[in-house]
Image 1: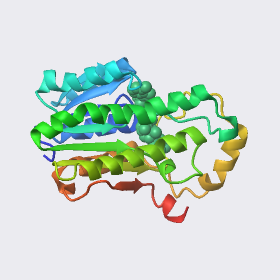
Image 2: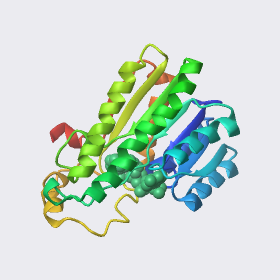
Image 3: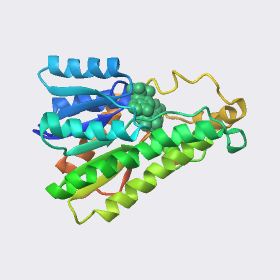
Length: 253
Ligand SMILES: NC(=O)c1ccc[n+]([C@@H]2O[C@H](COP(=O)([O-])OP(=O)(O)OC[C@H]3O[C@@H](n4cnc5c(N)ncnc54)[C@H](O)[C@@H]3O)[C@@H](O)[C@H]2O)c1
């Protein structure tokens, strides 16, 4: 098993990629804190892991709230004794609004969840990792983290920032045994757009240009395989990197 005995926190683990990552990590021997705003979903995922013989605990976490982030990391320590792997996966899509149409409320919400939540969770985990002289961080960025043509202004900027903090964290702690990498998924079959009702027609029409050349839509399990590689010692020399998992979409755009 590739993560035998490791303790992992996975955010946004009630659905989509986070669920697939939590389940794969548990299958590979990790004890998993299944963190999500949606506690029923998180409990279902943790229950499924336990039913398959794995170890998991669900914790209700709004990643936009500092106290929830602290409670989430504390839960890993109180329940499983330590923290080895932090997967910052929780995130939300915007409504494709270009900057001319973006509201302050939407901008702040997207940044609180997609970006500030990532920074705060890393900041909380760092002392534990420094103490151990070891630790792994995997951030779910997006192809929208390096392309300007995949989402609205808020989502695009928030994911560019996730790539920035990934590189900075990887560099800063490179000699402290801590690695920090990101995955940039392309279009993947999840529930990410399920709650969006206020699509911005102009912005959405602009993104159609690149959506038309998506080679294929991925499955969450394909992203989980990348997250497994980045969490395991097999990627020991990979740090501060962004791995695109998009079937070649951004190879052309
Ligand atoms: N699906 C795609 O095409 C795609 C592409 C690139 C990047 N991503 C990124 O992948 C990550 C996972 O998304 P997904 O596609 O699996 O979507 P998803 O909606 O299926 O899962 C996201 C999970 O995050 C949780 N979540 C949302 N806001 C939260 C909050 N404030 N606190 C805690 N949990 C919260 C949701 O409850 C949900 O369970 C996100 O960061 C997303 O931006 C998705």
